[in-house]
Length: 67
Image (cartoon, rainbow, N blue to C red):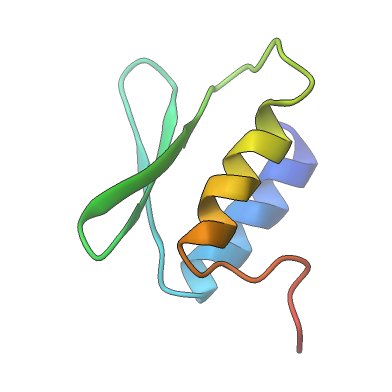
């Protein structure tokens, strides 16, 4: 997992999202018990981070965080 994804996951937990790591290494993001998106453990597509963030933002995730 790269450091940018770690930052996003830390912030997602802070904002109330649930992070679940599957046996396959994939990281599932949930909000209120519903799956929002899944990140690959080792993504090969350079757009995967942007696509995952887009799904999370639609579910109410604020990125970059406003403090």
